[in-house]
Image 1 (cartoon, rainbow, N blue to C red):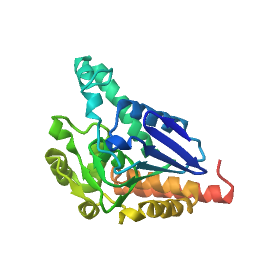
Image 2: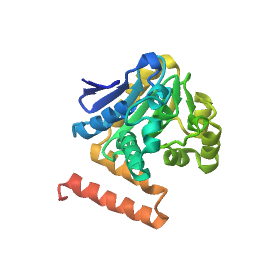
Image 3: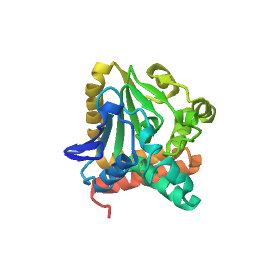
Image 4: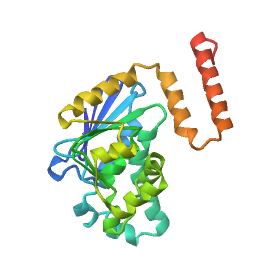
Length: 254
């Protein structure tokens, strides 16, 4: 177990569980937490295949900790606003890296979401490949209410899942989505009673681990790139992936 700045990492063989551990503030996020998440991503052992992200207490994450963002420190709103634009953008790129490692091709990431997943919390759930939602989950991209934009790599993922028009409406209104609507829109992999969130996540994890790891990695790569390839390019990618798998299984690959 590793604990750092309000985030905990536990590992059980091929499964790593990242827990946001500031339940007293509904797991409101800070730059220190993002630094810890980046570290976890860099130091994850190669045998890990599935990463589960969850929140302690009553919520997944209520978003950015505004007390930190509006206070002092090198990542506060005031400090970022006074930095040269290139330096401020580089700082934000570091924040984004806390989320984007969950996209890694050799991992499948699952967000186990209950209660609030607001702003940065919603974007953390979007960073994961799959989302298991408790029926009490409440999602919102609330940055617009602060005069800000979603900047933690969530906008592209949202468009991929729900389309441009719906993503625009969600982001510019900042409204709440309940679990049932999230399911209808394609944001949820599963919606389960809150009492069943842990067991449903465990069952999904077990199903993911049952497949051949190299085949799973190839399948994720095929699906992740499908929307950006032409049909001919996608078919070529399928052929090439299958040849790699056949050669590996036959022991003739490099």
